[in-house]
Image (cartoon, rainbow, N blue to C red):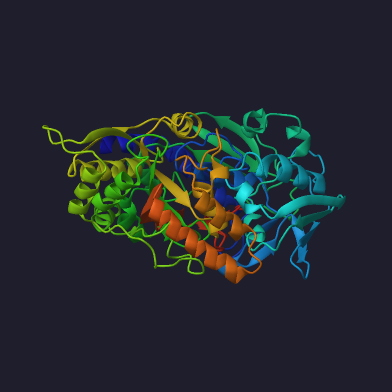
Length: 535
């Protein structure tokens, strides 16, 4: 296996040497950005399905499309909001109007002007209709008005503390109205060859091998980007990915691009940098989600039994070498403004799991099993398969026979979000800086959306939960909104349509030659407009 992986990495060596020579030719000073060159990036996790995150929030999609698309705003350090396509914004005293002034002279990559009409169209036709979280995020918005081409006004029913936090390019992408109006948004061919306003524009996509972006010569931020080209390589094998980093064939990767088993080696390698910052906005976790539409997981006792059967401390040690933190809530403990520890918890207790399963009318059979289910693991690399294997072994001890089922990402998405053909899944959840963005979509009945990845795939619906969520959307103050989200956490942990296995600590791997990376709370999705390669 190791020899095969090294051979896989070796095919990138000529490119690595060529890139080193190219950077050296243009180098002037280690402190002065070097113009030109190609940055080779590993696409992680895996190959994206499309190249716009306007409706598909898969990590690999967002990691690439944020180089092609700008947001109205972006995050700096310490959650500070900074201008991007909007040069300024102002909220009225009563909190019911947010007015944005747009940057003049911005062009789409095809030369058409970017205007307020594109923002209005994206809000009405994309964010509200096919975005997995848009209905929740923008629930307070009554209308979006465009008094002129460079002004956008959000009219609100009530003040909303979440909207500004959702307007970066990774979360609420603006698509060109002239290419999307009157089309099926999800199936529009421009999703695979996107036209954005960002520092890099789409060049080519060779399926299974590479995605190439080139410098946008008309970018509004004069002189940016420094790099001529980004090449995203598809390298499925984790060992081959690390070998490519070691040789310099790959210079950058986000979203934990190497195996946890290689992380310590990377930290000791002086030619590489390992960075854990830049994921605060993402708030990543691993989740076990049940299909509550059918037996046996339509019974909350069975769901609680499963939770009691899994030793999360052991899971952290076995699957992440202790990097992951056992989960306690759908809102992560790092989201301190909203998180509450005062929740129903399910400590490791196999005897309690057995009692709950007996109460649910699912006794052990003569062979020792109670029932059989299939567990689908998110195909974001071998880590999720390991999570699935740990869950399988845990449930076997209480009489639940689990079959693991692997598939490619498109099939996983169809199975869960289109066909609802699953029993339980090990998947990923991101918090995106605010539970109204990252949590509601899994618990609100209005986010049971066919064909929309990362929505309420479990089919969970509870009027009590809907009432709490909708009250939070209309909360008159931020204090009241926080109070309601603590109640939402308690309801979620009581009903348990899904539960957090581990809070992730994700990491970025970069060549020591790579400079100018973002430092904000969403730096994992940095546009790379300031990035450059030293000799």
